[in-house]
Amino acid sequence: MKHIFNPQSVALIGATDRIGSVGLGLAKNLLQGKRDIFFINPNRKKVLGQKSYGTIGEVKKEIDLAIIAVPAKIVLKIVKQCIKKQVKAVIVISSGFAESGAKNLQNQIQAHLNLANIDLIGPNCLGILRPATGLNASFAPLTPKKGEIALISQSGALLDSIIDASYEKNYGFSAIISYGNEAGLKLTDFLKWADKDKKTKVIALYLEGLKNGREFFEITKKIEKPILVLKGGKTKAGQKAVSSHTGALAGEEEVYSAAFKQAGLIEVKSIEELLDNAKALCWQPKCENNIAIITNGGGAGILTADYCNQLGINLARLSKNTKKVLDKKLKCNWSQGNPVDIVGDALSDRYKAGIETLLKQRDIAGLIVIQTMQIMTESEKNAKIVIAAKKKYPKKPIVCSFLGDKLTKKGIKILENNKIPNYNDPLKAVKAIKTLIN
Image 1 (cartoon, rainbow, N blue to C red):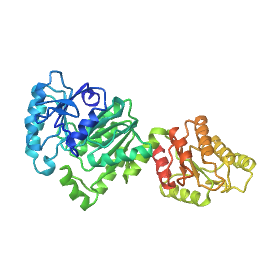
Image 2: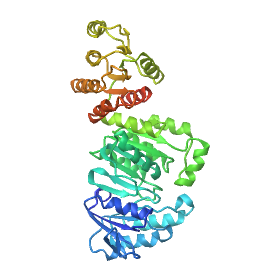
Image 3: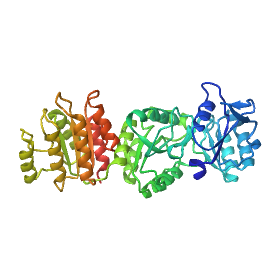
Image 4: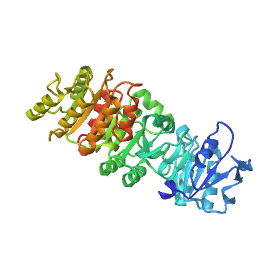
């Protein structure tokens, strides 16, 4: 896969500087990286100030990766030129194939590339991004931050929105892969690659349908890294939309959910949940099912306890010694149970005492820290206390829910810059810690 994820030379067939075009988006993104880029367009002498060639055959240098973004009717002709050039891999961005009824044309392209032993991604895809190597071989609107999430999606447009949102929400990616119609490389090929990739810690997957369900589930059972999956096309309306999107078969909701569970995949219900939980898995260790909650707001603690109960998360019993220490250190009328409510007027010293005492109890496996914003709440100090506690107890996961916005931003930034995930709703924090439970 090195020719795909770290090519030394890339040719873009369909490069253009026409405003609003896919070819322009691809050209701009490719030029961000430090590698040889060759633009191919017989109707232009230059694209973005760089020489444009009439055909890929005119390029004297070897080409590792060819990206094709031309009308579907001439893709086969371009593919034959790429084969003659002996490129190592091809991404077909163009749509208008199996998803719109032109399966025969797609099959011809696939057959020619298979015979030449050239890897194919697509057609009908956004492309691929590998932030670690500075590769943006896509027409995505932005290049995301480096991270440890490999995001693999059957939908390209969905990826665009995720990339846009990732800047504000502090998500980073080891790779982003849009595999489209799977005429060449399959979803399973990318899953196996991500499992071996040293830069990937978690795999996040959006899929609509499977072309070979048996193979998919056999392979995912063998993958050691956690896989989060968001399934589209679970209702009849969604299934109908899937068939016209990528030409895949969606299948029944109950069948898929049962199979995901059996294969050890973590199913989520939304894009936000997919990324929220991926972040927790990247930043925090796994743990046993015995969790503590600390909060300065009774209502928030009650909601968190309810969510834990609904999701099968066990709330740890506080030991006599833990209660004794909390009585001594908190010096307030605290709740005497889990959730540990340290009362609304809690300053950072009370959070410090509560967090350290709870984590010290041996059978407490992980901690949810809730902060509601009162006039005396010290958000930044509380964040630094959480970070210090995490360094002292690295094997115990901590997730936070610092509630609010304007007054909590600085504290949240401190947390996330130190890889402590924060969620703007206790339910999201509970769902995140559930993914960490063995």
